[in-house]
Image (tube, rainbow, N blue to C red; front, side):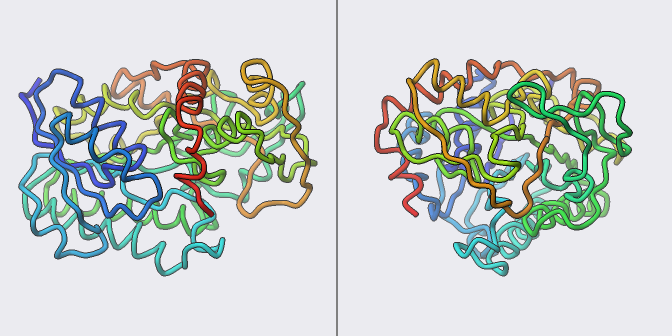
Length: 361
């Protein structure tokens, strides 16, 4: 193992960035942690003071502005956790398509140029949304109790099985504008790595969830659902017959840290081993109906309405297969889904205004 690293986290005051910063600060490895954020995300200011107390040096900057990165100190690694994380971004009327591309793709270019200047390694936190929507939407699924599952014995497209969607699954368009910006960022990151001899890793994450996640249904469905349930806010099962059978897996961001530590110290790897899925997988997968059942048992009864209107880019079943990360990094998720939900619920009880603070629209 190498010694302590100088690590820069973009989007450090967002949910994922701040969670990783805290976990790295608490790891005892002695890393020097630096972060920057533009603080445009509602709720991000709540993380500033806590990170400062933990010794994280914070800078105010927008990764879309190359000059904002000029004041940042040299580092050994950059973890890119800054992005508009919504699959509806650019089409929902809240952000423009140009803003999405400028932030998620143009920002990646600026950070990669920073890495080139300082000879820093780069870890891109990417997404399951780089996988092609049309074959995902057409997966053969059936209702099994309160959740969809892959239909046993049905023919499946390459790259998908009972364990989930693997890295070999199609990334052909359409993947949504959001997914396209992340997929293009992946390609640029790998090209910068090869061209300028920089270590680069692309970690495709499933649905990330935990306490302090900002509560919007399109960005943090687990946190949003629990906060809204506890406050008896209106909730809807959208599309898929209004049953709530659609399934997602769940991963706490801090569970990424053991893999990040190994990536910091990794020798040169072939290009094919620089992309891997990181997700809770089938063991953590829940439907919205199952999430409601958990909420009912732990937070009391609440009615959920049905809205049969399909939502753009929605798919019935999305579980990532993280076998490659297990092979490459001996990595497995450490936080069971029940513990993630309990953590979110405890935070929701302690912060009754969280939805208003983090999702005012």
